Length: 102
Image (cartoon, helix red, strand yellow):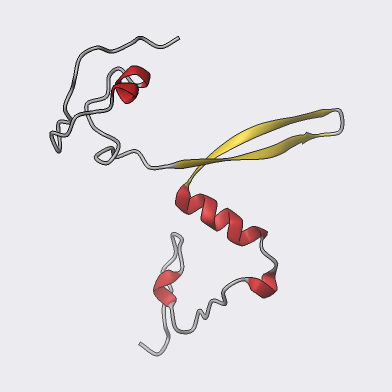
C-alpha cells in the first residue's frame, strides 16, 4: 500500500527530521507536521435527497467551520448572545452598514 522510505529528510522550514511514517504516507512532503500550512479537518455526515433517492455525503470542514456547526446544533437558550448595537464590525457580507448618526 505505502512505500517504505529509508532516507532521512529534514523539514525545509525548521530543519527538524521529518518522521519516516509521514514520508511514507506523504512521499512528496517537504515540511514537518508543525510547519505544515494545512490545518486539521473534521468530517460531518449529511443526508441528501428525498424519499427513495437519498444518500449520505461527507462534508469536510475546517476547525473553525466545525465549531460554527456545533454552535448551531446547541439550543438557542445556550448560545452566546450577540449584541449588534455594540459590534457592527462583526457583521459579514457584501453590504456596508451606514450609521445615520455619523
